[in-house]
Image 1 (cartoon, rainbow, N blue to C red):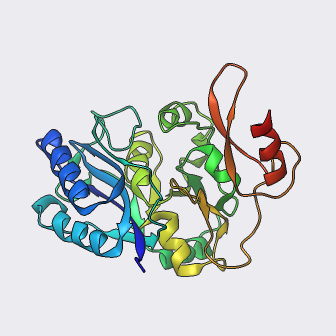
Image 2 (cartoon, one colour):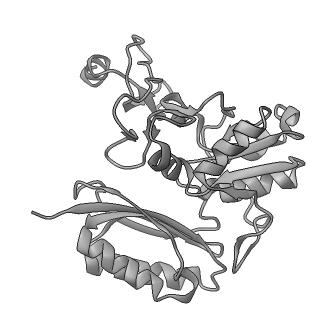
Length: 286
């Protein structure tokens, strides 16, 4: 029986030729039979790929042969073998699209001017020692409907491009003299978000090493994280153990649910909404 896995990773490193890296990645994944999504820019690489465990191990070995990626950290999770329908590898201006490619500076150590990295246990220690700590969600607001850190501030963001406007709106100026812990799924968005926040006058900014994934692996449901984690594959969400707190509710009837479904709006836009199985069935029957 084939064991399938999913790899989540990112690496900030100056890349002189993102197009060449894109072609190499496409060839490597195709040869190994891996599918998923990879973005490359002058700032580095961001990827989620899945497939047989031996292919995943060979992919990691291939990645680490490239000098700029040799110390890339990979997060493993269980896969089904069909988590991603195809392989997509793209070269972009940014590997996380905040819309400010020229503001982001990267050197051999990573993003320049970002927040202080905290290990999961250091997050808890900071909160214990300072009641003024504010958790700031670095994901799209939709994702926080099913899970977030306790009492977290969730900005009104539909895409990553919305963060700059939110930060410059004045709505969060009250946080500028407080310790702020930014968080996101695997940590990549906060590498940049924390730097953008510091550039805009937020004095004491932190980020969680490995993001929600690492924190959840460490503390399960016994820490400061509440609910489920939205993920970008066929699973749609994951939990860090039995008995996780239920935060999500059906947009139509209010029943508890953690599952998002696609729905077309009157103007023809497709959005993801939380629906229970019964309401989802009605939606797709219409």
